[in-house]
Image (tube, rainbow, N blue to C red; front, side, top):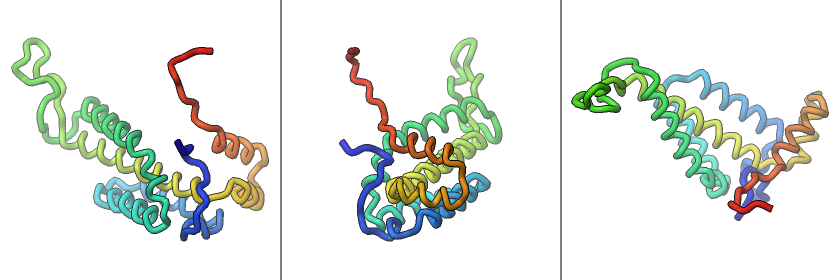
Length: 174
């Protein structure tokens, strides 16, 4: 199984960009998604990142995290629906006819919208950072960050964190 978030050698548009331009790309995309509360705009950002990944021949690597993204999206929406009773009531988590607790947790339109905004923001950030990491050689990133006068300790921590493979639990102990 291919490791996630590791450099993938291909000759696509995103690979040919300089690491500095990719850093600017990440900053701009991150800023746009964090300050926006427009669902349509956030959905367009998600679609645009997927289109970029497709045209750069990186869509398989980007979509490798789709199960995690789907699970986290459901978690974001459910938690928001339960904890933010704002707006018109769409229904109840526990039906109103249930004795003692029936109708006590309303599911509202405002909570659903906030949950979707959080979900789209999460997707944008994950896809954008994946594009950045899988298309940038670590050595090129180090050189760029050094030129940007970033402290070498921070660069080293970032590269170590990027290069450390995910730990897989096998169910057996040694």
